[in-house]
Length: 136
Image (cartoon, rainbow, N blue to C red; front, side):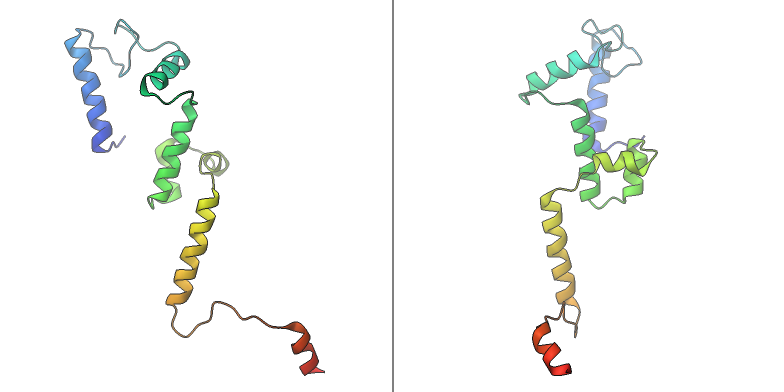
């Protein structure tokens, strides 16, 4: 698994804390006494959210946010699917939610693209009644 520098630092810091506590286990995040893995992620997750001042959040919200961040950063969707272990497109699409801001950005990018095309018009408006009268 590839980690960015910030996440790698988090894992290394966790490892060092475990080593200092004399409880070097194969787990990154351990139970309160540091001797085993976290048994119930829900309780640990809620406590972590409270401690971080985030209020009540679902664990899967982070996964969804991370997927969206990768896609918005320009990472190909197929690569994002592999990073998060999505085996099917339908599961990936659940995380990769299209927001109103995404639609607005798409329209803006299309407009910029069309304006950049020399000698083309983005569209033609025709008054059908006038056109109908001319052709008769």
